[in-house]
Length: 170
Image (cartoon, rainbow, N blue to C red; front, top):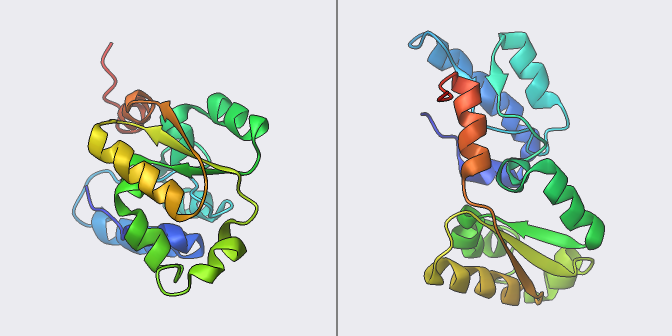
């Protein structure tokens, strides 16, 4: 596994180029390279890289599909379109990846600019515990939104990764 910088998710227009560079570098050392990203806001640019290089990626529009399932996630958005989604990673890193990166730690008045049209936060809890729940609550409170917890586990991601690397157990 060769991770890419997580802050790429704040700049999805950079993901495809970064994946291309990394995949091309890794192909020299590995028989097979697969991409552990869903589309993640690249609007098909990642698929173009995968097609060009003849490699596969995780399915879905974003990791939220992998955790909650695309149909369940669609229901979440249909019932309340102004939903902001957290994963365990995002709950843990919210202060850095959202508040600091968007400047809300320095300019809290930007809250409405970024989050004024959101109505709630949904935490797709993969491995919920008291610490993560507290961090998810703190993240939601920091942007002035109520928190809804949807326990998902890692089953969808595990299944998609196993399918991607061809190691699904019978």
